[in-house]
Every structure is written in structure tokens, then in C-alpha cells.
Image (cartoon, rainbow, N blue to C red; front, side):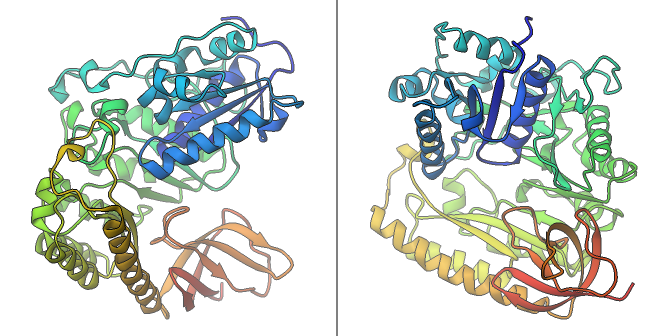
Length: 481
């Protein structure tokens, strides 16, 4: 593959979840290895590469708005091309290209292996034919055990430029785009579940686990880059290992990651309640270095609504799971997302959801109003609720959640927490970070009050006592060291 001309610059703009963050860093690694200069601002780049999100309507709008804003930079500036990648680009392909001529190209996941050549061609004026969207679940065998994938390369290859590391499968490189003490680490890709409201499996494909040695090697590399907290991400982390012949593989992998030099904390995200098992709860609450943090995708609590979603469980089963977690780790963090206004949802269903939320006392809950997603089964269901009814229910449940989350945070006053420092206020002598129960960007933060002696350092883990709360956010006073 030809090397990019000296001085050619690219900026990566990442939207969406932690999986997209990893994808962006793998794209950055490929581009850097081929001579591209990575810059932070699209206006300083020859190519603005926008890694889009295609999950729900609001995320799609954010992605389109970001692409349009980047396209505006082409007027009289350095930026010559705006290119869409990511889930929105993969999901809609030629449809997005036709609807958004401001973007110079729309690339799918299959273009990632040759991303440098694609961008060079676009800058040279070559026409790129966008892909026709397809159901990526059909690319692999139905049986998970039949999805054999090649192992990734050795992470200690001496031929790689400094600051780069191979990742897994078809993405052989990764380059960090930030310098914070937290980084996402991908366990797997795709999803085998068939939730009626979700289109992700159609464009992310079937569930494929990464090999344990690949995960461990990349974890060690990230720790060597100064990462203190690893956030394990996938579309469904509870399924990790099922295609490798061991559904309990995560339980044995967690201690191995925790034993790596430099890894201080491990956080597991994207857990399916129906797939939680006693051994996984035990591993997540008793393994040193693994945070007792449970990102459980409940989505609703009414059995009737959950069955229409093609999901399992109900209020009592979910409360039993919450109780099991808290029996093992009383201060564990538990968060979730819920969808209100799903087709056929009655007032009784909504009241059941409210009962669950009230009794569960979760640390954080994201509330989403249902909207039809292209190609999903839910879009064909009867009982569609008017938009104003959905909006009213979102407002109602959000109000309840805000109150419950604030109460839960207030209950933590007097609790001892371990806070990973992420930002400093040198003038005030304070710091901001996250306790074990607070996931990055979505679960609130903890402000550490000024302390005598040495100033706080980013990446430091501070033991402190909670003295106040504001919504989901905490204020804590460091203990004497």
C-alpha cells in the first residue's frame, strides 16, 4: 500500500459508544502506520473522518449534524474532504450518500482494512461507490461454535511505529487518541439477540468473541500507555466466550487482566440481565481490581412489554438480581436504560416499570422514548402510541428517575469511595474523577475537595469519604494518607 504524502493530515471525530472509540483508535493506528498525521481539529485536517452512530434517531441526527458542520469547513479552509464511517455509514451506505451529498464518501466496515488507500483516493478525486447495506448476520454461521476467526498478530512486533499496537482480527493496529487514564477494550463484536426494537445486529453482525490472549495483550499495551482503568465493551459482554466453547470465559479472563502490571481497575459494560449467572456476579464482586459495577440492560420491567421486545424477565426477577448483587457487594454500582412508550405499553405496564425503579434504587437510569427503527420488528407491531403520549411518559419517568437517583447518591454520604482522578482544578486544589460505581461519561462524577500536602495527579486513585451529593454527582473528602 502506498504511503500517504508527507504532511497529509486527518482528524477523527468519534460519536456514540465505547465500541466506536475503539474503532476510531484502530482506524487511527492504520492511518498513522501509513504516514498520515493525526490532528485533533477537523479544520486543521485534509480529511475529516467522522465515525458515526446509528443507534437511535437522536444519535443519527447528531451524526448528520456533525458531518454537515465538517463539510462547512471545506469553504476556504484546509479541509478538502469529509468522510463518513461507523454505524450510520454501514447501516445506510448508498442511501446516506445520496441523502447527504455534502459528504465526499460513505465507507462501510469492509473499507476499514484499506482505510489509508480509500482516503488517498478520495483526496485524489477518485469516485467511491458506497456499499449497498446488507444484513451482516448472514456473513457468519448461525451456530456460534462454527464462527472460527483467525487469531490476531503478536503485540510485540518490532516493526510497528512507536505508540502503535495491533488489535484483533481484521483491525491490526490501534493508536490512542486521548491521554486520559481510562480506555475502552473490546471483548467482542456483534450480537445474537433479536430484540424487536434494535437494529444493531443487522449492521454489526453476529456475536464474535476476541481470543483471550488478544484481549490480554491489548490490555497490557494500554496499561503501558498509562491507562489505569480498562472498560470492557461489546454489544453483549455476558455472552463472551460462547463461540469459543466456554460461556464462562469472562469469569476466568477477569483475574488475568487484573493481574497485569499497571492495570488498577477493570469495569465491565453491557451486561444482559437474562444471561447473568452466579459465577459472573461472584467474579465481578470478589476479584481484586474488578469494580463491582453492573451495567444491566433491563429496558423495561413489565413482563408483557418485555415479551413484545423479545426479552426475558420481569420486576420480581430483576429485583432478585439486584438483591443478589448487593448481597455480594452492598456498595456496588448498578445502572440501566429503559424504553418507555413501546408499542402496546399500557398505563399498568408503565406503573410496573415505575414500581421496579422505585424498589431497585439504581444509581443511574437512562430513559428513552420509543421510536420506530428501520428494519426492526417493533416497527411492524400494533399498538403504536402517539408521539405526544410517548413524550409525556418520558417526562414522567425521567422525573421519577431524577428523584430516585438523587436519593441513591444521597445514601452514599458517609461511604468510603475510591476515586480515579481524571481532571484537575489547580487553582482551587480540587480534582474530579469517578468512584467505582460511576462509569465514564454516563454515571456522574465525584469532586475531591482540596487536601493538604501533594497536589492531585491525573490517574491517581484516591480514597475519600462522601460528604455531599448533587443529583448523581458526589463530593468527597480525601482520607489521611
